[in-house]
Length: 134
Image (cartoon, rainbow, N blue to C red; front, top):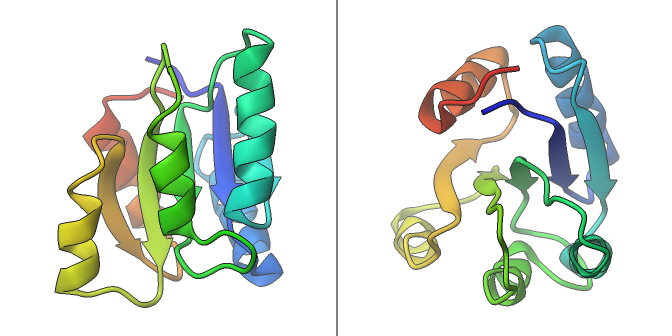
């Protein structure tokens, strides 16, 4: 599988900027990068893409703590969509513990938790877990 699109859902512009730099420096340059500032904006736009018959992103990097709709709200609604190609979601957060990890296991789309800040090794781990080529 090849990565065509990576979606970043995070309200922190510094984290988004750093993630984009890491993606571009780790062979993700051919991938489109979608950025949404909260779960509601992401859900609206991704649902619109789905309704137009467009593919979902291959990978979603999801923050948990955001205004308007947090990562959990996004997961609740996104996981109910009739997805043909299911993205692999990696929760990227600075605050999580056993409770959040247990909660995340209820969602089939969530592959793993990654601690902020995202580093090159995390991206390599994502590729290995996903069996995805860039």
